[in-house]
Image: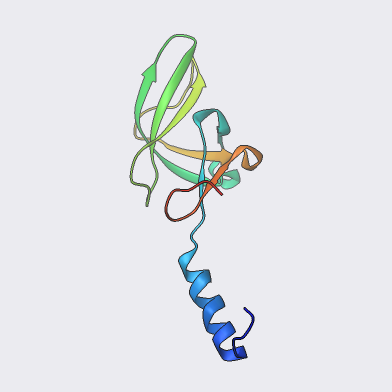
Length: 103
């Protein structure tokens, strides 16, 4: 920020920090069911779809525009309407800026 006064540099940094919103994206393979106390996020199971060897749980998380899909073992004790904790494998997360561009 060459050629700017200290005040202008500070204002520019503040403006840039408000413009950048990072978002993480993950696939269902990157999410695992955990106890709510150990979870990164938690939600309510809306639908359980049993497919034999695996089960999909569609989870409503407050503040998210759509349900998250979680892959579970075929036989699971989870039921629609129950609360579930989700842990994300952060090493596999994909990061996006506010415009959806990959960071």
